[in-house]
Length: 228
Image 1 (cartoon, rainbow, N blue to C red):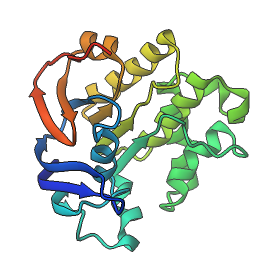
Image 2: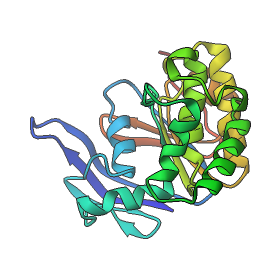
Image 3: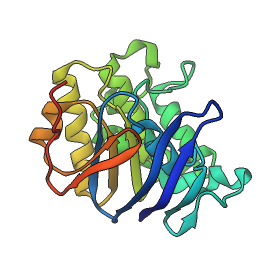
Image 4: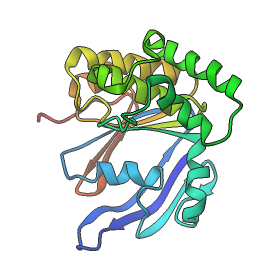
């Protein structure tokens, strides 16, 4: 599903974000990526959906070599991938329904299928009754649910989440995690960068810990492992 081989990333200012990373993530896994701020987690995550390119090494996702992928082909590659951000990245002038539908419209899905599928995923995230509302009329947790619905509406093989509960209160964070658990139980691979110790320690999955740009721990059913 996802394989990194001798991957390093050095930014133009000389900062080495990740160094000689080797990792494999199989179809259907749920993986937490943990570590201190500035450890390289976000770069690690961003390289998986080709937001960043490695300075050296190779990344394979669904058999596609990302360093060799032309920029013009990136949107097509991302059709099989859902991405959830900490700050939601919703379109403020579109309704909940329209925000989710947009991901299907760009790949020219039939309008009838768009309506069926969008309502299906809004029901999954508990927002079917708010389909006509604008993002500004929703709570932060509800906006994140819309973001998740948008990420899964095209039935991607993998969902990548970068601190998806970072701006949410503890109760809402658990609600969001329950949705990710349901997505995972339906067979989707989930890779999630997080600082949420309670979630990692209680909803146990594989844990990859990154420090100073290197993988220092990779455990099945691991714990968070940090005190801060």
